[in-house]
Image (cartoon, rainbow, N blue to C red):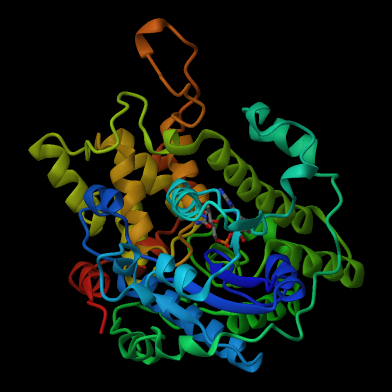
Length: 471
Ligand SMILES: Cc1cc2nc3c(=O)[nH]c(=O)nc-3n(C[C@H](O)[C@H](O)[C@H](O)COP(=O)(O)OP(=O)(O)OC[C@H]3O[C@@H](n4cnc5c(N)ncnc54)[C@H](O)[C@@H]3O)c2cc1C
């Protein structure tokens, strides 16, 4: 029997080091490549109080899809792009829904990354339920380790990062990724299907109107989406000695080379963590290793920890410690509504927080230190439900990643290791929250207020950049 494959791209928008696509290329006689254009879920829209992605995130996604399309074209393939609205069968014609393609093409094998996100897993489950004979081939390939490699069952994932790190940091990571030189032919009938829209192409080429970046070394052209740009950045980073100072510089609020800036490409899977790891090992072999080069690996393990955590706890990642209702969108009072609105546009009156939020709105990026301080401020100073902040980050960050974002927010709020049916009245030991002293942190990391001053007087511009509609 002919094997008809459908490869559904999610957080793996790449050809290089794509083990699952390689598997598909070896296994099926015909292959359709599909991506569902990422969109802000109703849950996140409600919590973020935003209708859609910010301009920087939207642009990064468009660039990544266009790059994937061109890389597939080099292999003689098309990329079918499904709008999120095309998910329901009553939309448009049946041919342009996922189910429609599976049905009309008589797809026998669905290849899809084994995503840790709850919504993404639900989509695969419901597709499988609609087509019980469909063989679903999945793989966790946005991580350094495979699930089978972990020396514990997922349900026994250590509660602390340190314990997790100690158990995994010596596991082997394969040093050679699969190489794809050819893909099975695409079905001809697909030529009428959706491709990347003109709006995406305009967005990809647009220069966002962000004229207020006051000499920031991060500007809107720093992050170009797509595998080619990601690999070029990786190459550029390790062509310089930055990695040897990483541990000393990584806490800076600004500065392109102070941290790796790998996160945007990692988040969409334009570059795999294994590819990054291999480049790090090569850099160490050539130029020597030190504490700093180890620390890059250490931070990649934090990413890993949040990934497996997200997978193991499922939808409870999106609950705060005081309620179990997903749809209650926080912001119960006028004060919290106003505090949240001020926080979003960088008008809280806490200078370091305002500078970081303006940086986010103007560039789509914020340093790790900045994320910790702005999150701490929203939760502990402004009394807002952390999920509102997490959803706003989701709408704006060019490197948004479900596990790293919601995991870090829950961690700062002290909600990450809550039992699923948390009951604070039962005198359980509460996990530690992370409340930062903003004045002390400013003294440590921005002692002469260079970063704060750089982002003063930018309220109007930054918010207009974040609100810029998709062209
Ligand atoms: C509230 C909050 C929200 C966050 N949201 C995201 C998010 O949506 N997407 C995202 O990729 N990271 C997120 N992070 C983690 C971290 O801030 C970013 O990964 C980092 O700032 C990206 O810049 P970089 O690539 O230069 O990092 P580097 O310092 O160069 O670190 C190298 C890589 O290690 C990983 N890493 C570093 N720190 C962390 C961390 N704390 N948690 C998980 N992985 C880490 C990233 O993949 C990063 O690219 C968040 C952190 C906080 C506190």
